[in-house]
Structures are given as C-alpha cells and as structure tokens.
Image 1 (cartoon, rainbow, N blue to C red):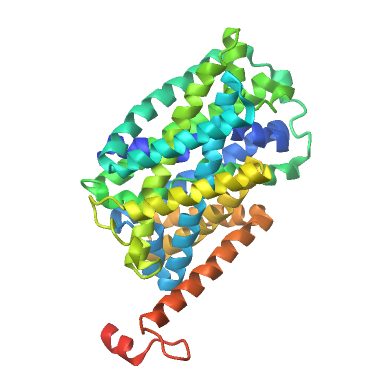
Image 2 (image 1 turned 45 degrees about the horizontal axis):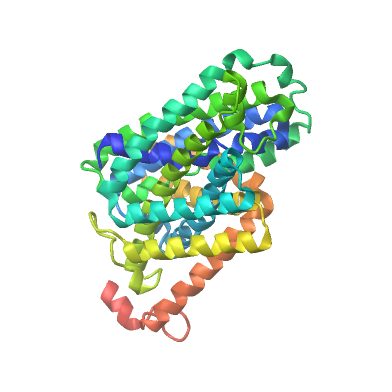
Length: 426
C-alpha cells in the first residue's frame, strides 16, 4: 500500500457512517452539548491514532493490536484483544450497511425492504472486493475517499448560510451529564485507528509510510467530523432527529429534494468503512488462527500479500446472521452501535496499555501513549453496561485458548504448560 491508499483506508475506517447518522444520534442525547463530546473525542483520537501508528511502524504484523498485546502482556491478553476486535466487525458493518440503507429508503421509498435490501447489496459488494485482494480494495478506497470528502465538505459549505445561533440554545437541554452517554455513542465515529494496524505489513515502508498516512487521516477526519457535527446542530436545531441529517442539510441549503444525492454520499461513506474493516478483520482472523487463538482452518492469508479468504467468509457470514436477527426481531441500529463500541473500547484500553509498555521510555511516542491510555480509560467508564459484552467475549476467548492448548498437548491436567512444551520453548 502507498501513503495515499493508507490514508484513504484510515479515513474510510474512521469516518464511515459516523458522518451520516451519529451526529443526529448524539444530538438527540445531549443537544448542542454533544459538540463538547465531539471535541473531546477528537482530542482523544489524535494521540490514540499516533500511538497505534508508532506500534504499527515498529511491529508490522497482521495481528495488529493483538500482536502488541502479546508482546507486552502475553498470549491471553492478545487473544482477548483479537477476539474483541474480530467479533466487533460483524455487528459494526451490519449497522453501517443499515445506516446507508436508511438513506436509500428515504430517497427512493420502499421502507424497511429497501433498507435491508441495500444492506445486503453493500455487504456482498464489499465482500467481493476484499475477496479479490488488498490491491483492488486499496484502489477503490482512494476513489471513495476523494468522492466522500468532496460530498461532505460541499454539504457543510452549502449549509453555512442556513446556520442559526438560536439553535444552540439551550446548550445542554438534558443536563451536562448527558455528554457522557453522547460520548459513548461517538466512540463509533472514531473507531478505526486500530483497524489498519492489521495491514501495517502491507505498506512498502511501514516505519515511514504508516505515520504519514495517520497524520493526514487525523487532520481530515477531525475537520470533517467537527464541521458536520456543528452544521447538524446549528442548521437542523429541533429537527435534528431526522433519519438522514446529511440529506436534510443539503435540502435546506439548496432547496428541493436532494435525498438521492445524500443517499449516494451515504453509500460511498459506508462502503469505505466496511471495506477497511473487512480487510483488517479478515487479516486479524488469519493471524489469530496462525497463533493458535482461533480455529486452525482460518490461518490462510496471514502473510503479506495473501488474501485471508476463509477468515473473510466467517466475518461476512456472521454479518448476514446478525442482519437476519435484526430483521426478525425488529431491533434498532443504536443497540448494534453500542455493542460494537464497547468491544472497541476494550481493544483501545489494552492496546494503549501495551504501547506504554513497549514504546521506548522518555520518548515522545510513549508520552503520547500515556495520554491515549488516560483518554480511553475515561471512555471505558462512560461506556458502562455495554462493557459486559467484551467481558463475555474475553471469557470465551480464554476458554477457547485453554481448550486449544490442551487439544494440542500444550497443557497438563492441571492447566499448566506441559513439560514437553516448556522444553520446546526453552
């Protein structure tokens, strides 16, 4: 991957559906005070992105954060991180596809059928692109990133004359404490800085290219998110509950019905996000299998340049299962978002802690990692009950690791490493 492709992958992974749906969701929770949560998440994401870039440059491997956790804390921590990230991808990509489906349904009609049909098409398209390999998906990501930046910045610029300061009052209609729950939702918008670490070995020169890609991506993402969040509140005001706020911004700015235009932007944003997560998640699944933390049959594709097709099939299959459950139960996307972000917070906490331990002492990168760790620990607190899912996933990961070790003869009857394995490692 080139620096441009890496930047596009990062922008797609982090930006995604956070731009088309989450500003309205956060504003519903905290009103204009949600802008404080946006600013806080930007301040947390910058050191977090720099931390993962520093780790990726020093330890390029398909395992990503799982590899860093292994180097810092051992195999158990690596397995927990790997499972949390891997199993966050299916509900996250399903929610993304449904967000885009809402825009399409709003533009062309068809209600729930159009929404779900769009989700199916998007999931199939992105899976097919990743099946073809990272070079194809990287080129597609560059094109998508350019188009989506033009569309989003254009929507914000056109809506400036419609901004009304009165829409910022009262600033905290639900109290200042509502900023915490809004921030928990916004983790969804900033998840992604860890996703490309699984592709670090695909860069020509990771030590040089990865930090550059991250730096460009942080600037682009911060500008896009803050401008869209402010425009959503300042223009829509009490109408912020609109299902397709980006389309509403364009409609108010230019007059008439521009929902089709907004639907196109939503699809571009969603495809970029899903593409990055399927690519990174599939590589991670192969690496986990290679290291004995996942079923052995998924190990193909962990080497640079290979396509992890079996791991990709598992991710896509789980995504369709979740979509089916959502359709049958009528569950909303907000629950999927919160369940996904809880697992990402767990990944961030362990990843940032690993960085503090692995990066050189008294280096700028280590000080940045300390800041990142403090920020994600705060996110852990505000995530509250939604941290129960990563806790459950962590328990299942450790149970699998123990069973797999025993099956391979690595543990004795007491659960300790066998004498044969101890001699081999010595």
